[in-house]
Image 1 (tube, rainbow, N blue to C red):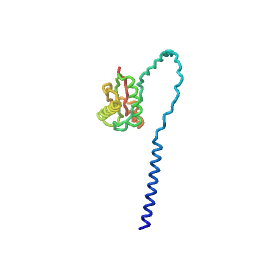
Image 2 (cartoon, helix red, strand yellow; image 1 turned 30 degrees about the vertical axis):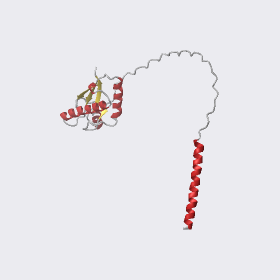
Image 3 (tube, one colour; image 1 turned 60 degrees about the horizontal axis):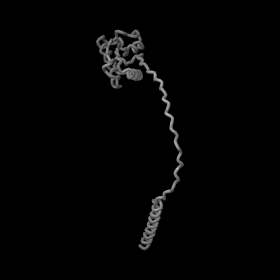
Image 4 (cartoon, rainbow, N blue to C red; image 1 turned 90 degrees about the vertical axis):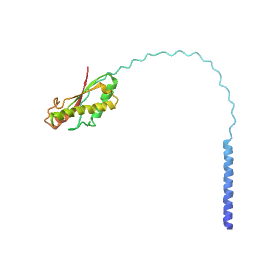
Length: 176
């Protein structure tokens, strides 16, 4: 018991010493330093400034919108855009924002597989898919006209798979 009291007393003295030391340090740090007197800088007379010369900025040449776009492609029997088409559609958005009043016709097409009625419906759905993308990107939907042609206007013969793939498209035409 005597050992316990001795140790407790030593710990208490140690803590008291540390806390007193900490208080002294705080007081030293908290003391503000007296202000130092500085001499005023010598007064220099300012000469009147020359008026700035107005430089005429060269007019920025307005970039004319170009509406020569590659065809937007689709998968077989689908109106879902291929990821490769997003870059083309983003370019269409940029060009249409340069000339917000321009009106475009979105001509939807399909390959020759399926019935003519199905192909016509699919071509209109593809054009509507492109219109939705453009409207979501901030283009006025009133400036976009939809037309579906089905398989009536192929770009290439529908005899090869490559030809059929090229015929599954939406084309852009500027309205006068």
